[in-house]
Amino acid sequence: MSEGGIVDGIRVDVVRLHETWMELVFPRQRTAVHRVLGKWKPRTRADELKYYLWGALGVPLVAVLYPLLLVGVAVRFNARRFDSASTRLGVVGVVVLAALVWGLLTAAARIRFDEAGFVAVAAASTVAVVSAGLAAVFKRAGGRATTVAFAYPFAMNAVFLPPVVAALYDPALGVVIERSTELAEFFRDDVFVGPLDPVSDYLSDRFDFEGVVVALMWFCIATPLGWLLGLLVTLANLVRPKSVEEQVEAEQT
Image 1 (cartoon, rainbow, N blue to C red):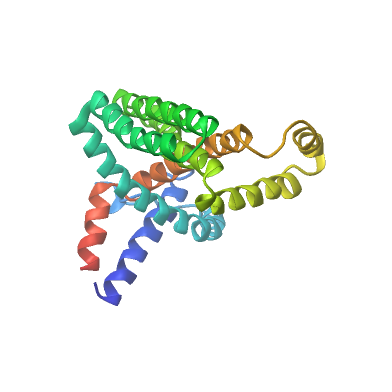
Image 2 (image 1 turned 135 degrees about the horizontal axis):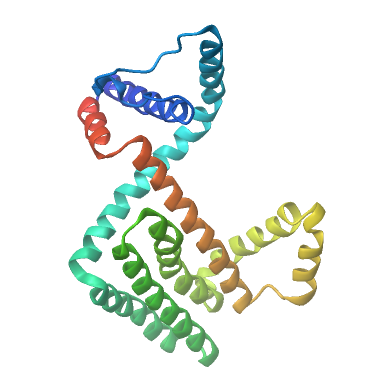
């Protein structure tokens, strides 16, 4: 991969992203070179002022969104692999595979943990298996909105929940709890502030940060994280559809 190819790939992405921004207000902006009428241009002084002002407003937005676009492209690349595997396996196959993976973790918990730890990991594994099946169902149901709203959050919970619960009972995985505690303190001290102070006080007074509370916190994190990843993939599909991605890859080689 040459340096010029990387620069050309970035240029294609940035231009496409800015054209997407422009097309929110002005017609025929994206890939207009392939259209009979060509790219729309302002003809009056007022239209020209609005056109270039809107374009200037999009520059900082593109600077912020471009790294997120790259994350979306990376997530989409791996999501396609999972999609391909789930298509071959089918919903039943996905459930069986998830049951096998998290069943092994549950078996290990039966040997390593006490009764409470084993039950907790078994419950988390059951939720993860069901989540994996629901993620496959909603993905097969089709539709970008359904995939983002349901498939991605269920998939994230299918991946995150069992190891987090196992970490509650395994000192070797204590780093997970340490990071979880730091994250909880961040939400309490930096997010739930001002108008949200009552929320912070309520959580601090009613709940100790242990056991099921940690699992619920990660469930609450995994769900919006799934939505975020789904939206980033949607952005990647919008700005860099498959045909454009192939063009960028060709220019980078």
